Image 1 (cartoon, one colour):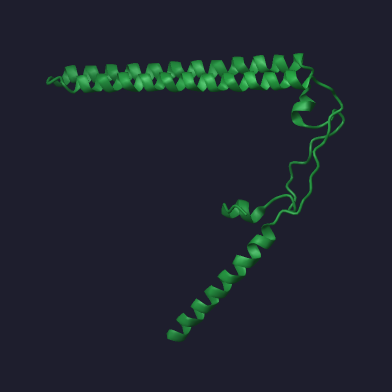
Image 2 (tube, rainbow, N blue to C red; image 1 turned 45 degrees about the vertical axis):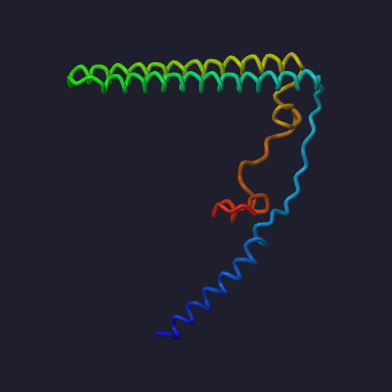
Amino acid sequence: MKSTLATRATSGALALAFLATAIPALAHNTSTSTASTTNSTYNVVCVQTAVGVHEDAGISALNTYNTAVASALAVRKSGVIAAWGNLNFFSRLTALRAAYGTYRISVKTAKTNFKNSRISANTAFKASMNACGATSADVAGRSKGEKKESKKMKMDDFNWLGFHFGLDF
């Protein structure tokens, strides 16, 4: 029994030692990729300004959404606390339903407003990018005649060990 346990322990230690040295070597990504260049010209400062405005709009929309949800939570809290002050079951139930219903409507409205803000920011961004002379090929990072790369993964381009095991090499 002891020899089997010792054999297993030794085998386990050897396997761990092998994996500790082999996995980083196998997971090393040796592929080289070059960024493709586009043939179009665009106003760089204009594009940078458009990106800045777009990102600021996204930040503003998210801040507005967070503020609305926090406010809805505060209103719900006070409503639920007040509802539990009622000694009558039916009046407490009515007050709780009202507090949670108001909260649900407030959050739904906040989500709708956030979605509409994102849509309008993206529409304005696309119009700004077109006004700056940037094309979809510029945004995608390839020239007009260049085809998209195959979606099929290549082993030298894909860190399969790190992806499979969730490891970061």
